[in-house]
Amino acid sequence: MGVFIYAIFSLAYLVLLRVPPPEFAQPVLLVLEFMPRWVVFLPLLLIRWTRFTVKRFLVIITITLLNVGWVADLELNPWRPDEIEADFSLITFNMGTDIAQAKQVALVFLSQAPDVMLVQESEENALRSVMPDDVQLHCHKALCLLTRHKFTFQNAITRRDTGSWGTFGARYSINLAQCVVNIVNVHPDTPRFTLLALLKNPLGGYAEAQALYAKRELDHMRLQAWLNGEAIDVIAGDFNSTAVGPMLSRYWNTYDNAFDQVGTGFGTTYREKGFATRIDHVLFNPKLTALDARVLDDTGTTHRPLAADFSLPRECAP
Image (tube, rainbow, N blue to C red; front, side):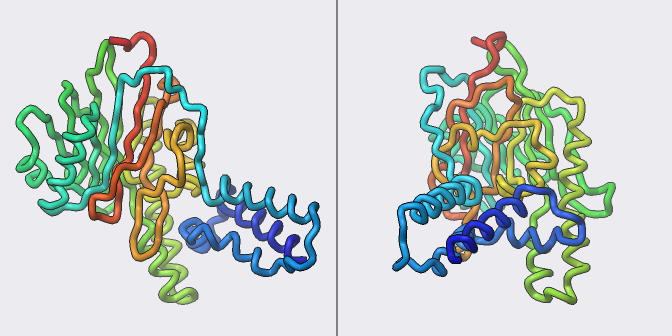
């Protein structure tokens, strides 16, 4: 019975994560999306290990491996295209706004030397005070770009039209090699307030949680509509959504995820109070080839930088 419960629980967990939730259930399934992944393994405690057979063992191992890969989102990707040389590199990092974190951004940029670094929740004056003169910096509100290449700021999308505040998307064209690479820095709304409203008052706060969930989803809807028809090569930033959550699968499924394709491990980019997950992503147009994706060292904030290397299309070769 324990093995059967484990199988059903795992299947339910997987389906609920991967299938777009009905509107009335969205806040509840958001809790499931951000729940620690080890929860899916709890039914193992119900298994009577004294009554063990080879068949039961193989079933348990199969379910566990599927959970590790599909629910816990472990990426291995042993066959990365190492023989291809990278000609475009990018780092995304939600930095925080104080001067100490600006120094960390400068350290990451100067030590890693990416072609482009996208920063969220940033403070322009703090960044300017610590960056060398040969590094170009552009910010639209709290979204910033750092590069040594020539670039053009195209436009940005804010929440002003919806009665809120903040820029959550900024689009750039980077002159790189023989062509232009179109990049978008994004930071849609956080799930934090939806989760807090639900967890503090599961019944009385449910209507508020639904409204907050809709507000968060609106950011993804508007970003998708804003970029519709545009030739975008890379979209990166703090998506505030896990790789298995409905936001990425519903609104960004025409792009590939760099860490999913060539990363190794769980790719945790966010840690706070014992909670850990991957909510920062580098998405890219399939005409690019992802060569590597990796989470960089801890800088002392809740987020960690995420780096990705690409090979550009042949016509862009230096």
